[in-house]
Figure 1 (cartoon, rainbow, N blue to C red):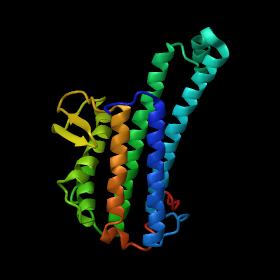
Figure 2 (tube, one colour):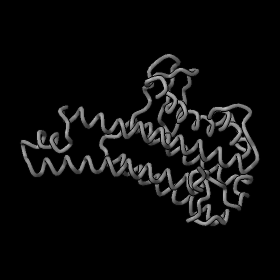
Figure 3 (cartoon, one colour):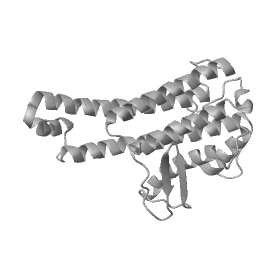
Figure 4 (cartoon, one colour):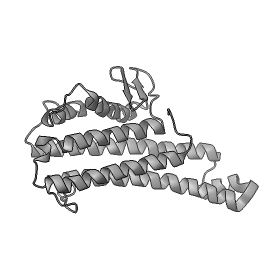
Length: 240
């Protein structure tokens, strides 16, 4: 399926992803002995991902519910009343597109930032650091520490999400080398110097789900899972 036919499918997949993250958190408690309620960087990052995914789903549901209520209450005049409730002078379809695109782009960015921060915290706990700055080098070092190849599927998955995030720096253009990756039957194609055209809801939900799978592989690799003490997260610890 190349795209969703309605937003109920988006909401369903987002909910599944949050359940997957919850399973990882429970496994961290069991395998690593780290309290669920602790400020361990693993729980902090995964809780943050759950919050971002959940909030995105809640906003989608709220907008769709508002539209349904307007249609039910105002009959043939629902569109005008719906636009009044939203507070827009645009057409309802244009307003929805803008609002939903904002959610999609924000979710992409926040998920990637949380993964990057988690990797940095884990690498610090392992006394390992990349030779150079940037997510490419951070992810390479993280995969190496986890005993995962840096040229396989996991690296591709991390790179695709990074490319989507990085395209915001250039207003939707891809400025790095061209790349084509197929993930779970969905093609992600980035052409250097061209617009990014692989950022639909289906693309975003698929790549987030794939990154959750990579996180699980990293977190329960032998070296990382051996970190039984709480991994610090500076923000969660309240450091200035």
